[in-house]
Length: 182
Image (tube, rainbow, N blue to C red):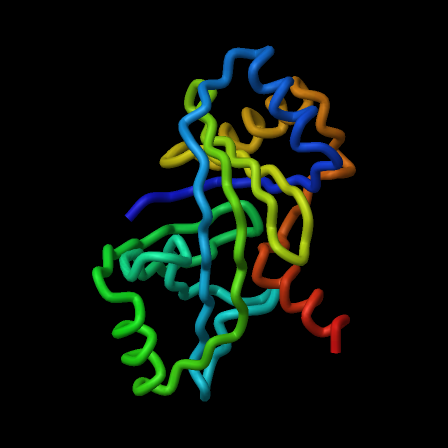
């Protein structure tokens, strides 16, 4: 288990942010497609919405049949404990979840670029249906210190505090997007 402190921001231009990251010396680690399929029990507590304590998902690259089964236990709008288990057969795990009466509540499909700057993990996401975002996270650090470091980083690269997204995950954003489409 790891503890993650994270703040997401809406980005007008990934190109501009890439240039800023290069300028300050952030190290690019790679790029990949990620598909997150979120599940919730058919009955009982729902694993989505602003008051949800848990997020339960399968994460994979959208092409292979390997990925991970993940649970995020939310402790605040910024902080979550993460549990992750590698899986070698995504389709089998999906079938098992269906048999256990879990329902698919949302799919988040994104292309992600990973960067590292000191102790900060930075990702640039182009999320299908939602747009362009940046997430900055710090792992296994006292949350007040991590929040200060993350907010200072955003300021350093020119991301306004008004563009920070507090307390809303891609799950909630995608569910709202899907409701508007109907």
